[in-house]
Each structure stands twice: as structure tokens, then as C-alpha cells.
Image (cartoon, rainbow, N blue to C red; front, top):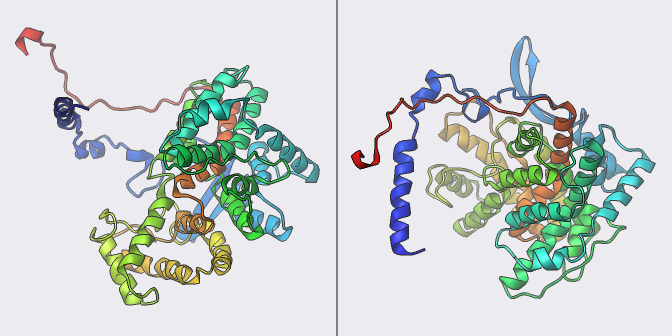
Length: 450
């Protein structure tokens, strides 16, 4: 962009701020729930769902008190789901896909059928990899994924049919294809932008989603059982998180307009790309990288505490005043996904010889709530969220940071699909919230008098 153009854009940008800033007091005056949250941070009820539930408090003697967080998929405790497939020594993501979409846990035959269907759908349309993914590599994998999803519309013989069987077919295909598109998108970036060898491995029908990700991503296609199991668990824990999360709500909003599946899922991807939603685990990893550069002893609590205080004061890392991976909009005492993760993260840390880092993560998890409580006035407790450990897991799996948020999408497409179907089944009106105009009436002025 030319310098003169930049000056004009900057001047126009200043006008946007000057004429577009709304007095914060007006939100109070009109009782507007900014971010669809009340003054205590509690979400405004905007819909009903049967897909999943988040619990962070309970009623004791008529009063609402915080409790350890719980997450339910179709009424079933996600911790019990994880215990079930771990006990049986099998992968769980495909089972969760079935549960979220159809409302019940699959029996052995139903699980076999869904696995076979997903294996069949994993292969992309003929020449799609060459013509779409390889010809236009992107620096951002979420953009590459969204572009590919929108382009798949052109390869669908019946893209605009919103009947349930057709939408279900589209959703299952996208669930199966997301890992392939994401990995191939990264390989294209690595080759064309970083001058690395181009590696394209075809997905294997006998492998699970998690196994296929590692198989396609790694040059030698090798992985350990623990690596695949932990990645599978991550997909399970990220598959869904209540209808009120930003990207699932986006799916409901866009679906309510009557648009096609590809447009609805692309909109959800755009939402998830935001660092306030899907990119938090990258921030956690980078924060710890900075922490390790600035502390000399991982076991020194005083040194670690001092760094955390600097973080909150905006004097360390990105100067944002945040300890990434700590705190959640709903959970206070604990995030159940982080609880599940932690025990298995320790096992992987032992396998990878990174127990010193695990010790540092554990110390920060323990110290951060104390530091935050002392330095900040907060209305609820603070605990580690799922992003706190997921980034560490991905780094131990040698997964590139470029794929951290796409991995979230690979999991959450299961929840988005369930929410799209739920909206179509129960749809009667387009979602259209009310906004109050607070600009004064202004007369039109002829151009020669302006």
C-alpha cells in the first residue's frame, strides 16, 4: 500500500473511532447485556439445547455456591466417557461424534458403522488437494481450512438442500475431512512458504481420527500408542462445550438464516480463529517459553511467583496483564477438561523426558490462583482451563503451533454439526437480537454546504 493511501486509511480509521465510540454509561442506562452476559458475568439465556451442559455451581441451603466444574455430553459426564474408552483400551472421539449427533452412545455395531462411514468420507474430492490446497497455500491454517470448506460447496452435487439426511451427510463428510484438509494445508505451507519437503500421506481406513492426524503429519508416519491416545482424548475434550460458546452460537445464528452447511461451518471457523476463543493454547505455550527464558530455576516458587506478578502488571511476555490458561467464563473452582488432561499429561511428560516442564506447569497451576486473588479483585474463583495443558500436550507431540487452533476445529466440528442439526430440527425463526440506536437524529446537508 502506498504512503498516501496509508495516510488516508489512517485518517478514515480515526473517524471510525471518533464517530463510532458509544458512551459506556448508555449500556448501563439501557440495561444492555454486553457480550450477552450480565454484570456478574453470567450468560443471558438465548436458547435451549440437549447437546451438552456445563455445571460450575450447585444449590446449597437455597444459595448458589461454586463447585468443581462438570461437563456433560447428552447428559453423560465426559469424565465417565473418558474412563470408559480408556478402560476398554480404545479410541473415543468417533464414539463421541456418534453421541453428539444422535443422542445416544453407540453399541458395538453402530460404532463400527460410524467408523466405516468416516473412513469412507475422509478422502477429498478428485484433484481437490492439487487444485485447492496446494495451489493457494496460506500462512494461517484456519483461513486455509475455511477456504477449503467453502470450496467444497462447489464439489457437492446438492449443496443447498437443508433436509436432515443431506445436512447429516455433509456434516459427516466435514467431520471426516477436517483432519485431512488441516494437515495437507500445513504441509503445503511448510513446502511453499518454508521450502521444506512436501509430504502428502493418504489417510488410512483402519486408523482412528487421532492416529490418522499423526500418520499424515509425520514424515515417517510413526507414533506411539500413548501419543495417539492423548491426542484422541484432546479431541474428545474439545468436541463440544455447551451451546453458549461463541462458535457454537455462531453456528445456530447462521443456520437459522436457512443457509447451506458449508457457509454455517465456515462462519463457525471464523469465530474459532479469534484468540479469545480458539487460539488461547498457543498463548499459553508462548507464555511458558518466555517464562523459561526469564527464570533460572524451575523449582523456585519465589522466582515463579515473581514472574506471575509481572505478568499481571503487564511487565512480562506480551504486556497484556494476563496469565494465559488461567480462568474461564463459566468454571471457577476447576475445569473438568483440565482435570482429565492432567493425569495423562504426566504420563506423556515421563515418556518424553519433560518432567521438569510438567513440574513448572503444575507449580504455575497452583500459584496463579493465589497471585490473581491477591493482585486482582475478582467475583469468582480462578483455576486452570483446558488450554493450560492442551498446548503443552501438543508441543510434546511435536505438533506445529500452526495446527493448534485447527486441532480445536477438528474436534469442535462434531459439536457444530450437532448444533446445526438441532437448530434445523427446532427452527422456526431467524435469530435476530435487538439493538438500541443511541445516535441523535441528524438532518441531511447538501454536499456544497458540508
